[in-house]
Length: 158
Image (cartoon, rainbow, N blue to C red):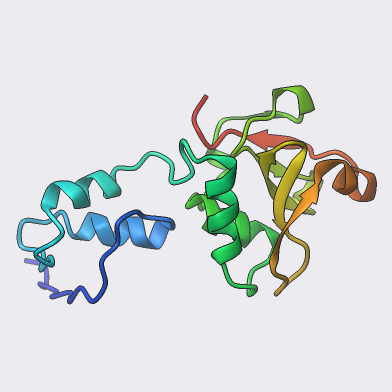
């Protein structure tokens, strides 16, 4: 038999925004989990089973979440934290096609040179360098600087 672990919940989570939070909510689905009174098992299951944490986010919601992330990240870690998707390359992908970009798509430049998330209106949200703060940039400026992205990954499973 496995060892039982008691977890004390010290804060309420209304929505998961990272893989770590999703895993925590999955632990809270156990019948013997020590959940706070304001977190039901069904709420924990809903957050545990979220297919994509970026799913159905609007441009403004992505920007708000992105700006709240600290400046300790590189571009890939930023995109992973913002979307809650750690294994980007397992997402549905296609060669970059500017005309088929959707809000929430992850853009990847060749050889992992850079990652950004498309937020619509010809703009992306990115972290420019290690430890940099998240910023909004024109996609055309990034393309001029680094060339076109190689792939676009679909965070919404379309």
